[in-house]
Image: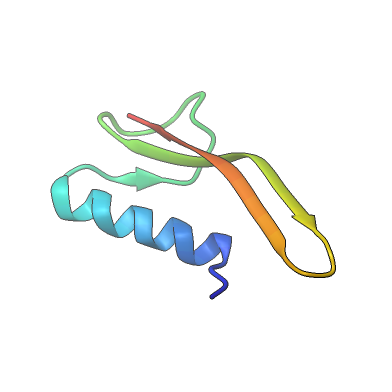
Length: 65
């Protein structure tokens, strides 16, 4: 099974929305101009390694509140 980064982000957003219905999730830059409180989701250290037999994806998910 192969999950895309987009599918992973949608799943994370779904879980956050279930628990925190009234808090918006933003995809903009978090430095200025956003409503508080807010969530921001960021993927960092995205890596993919592969060989003839398999490939591996890894990443760090940062959720800012």
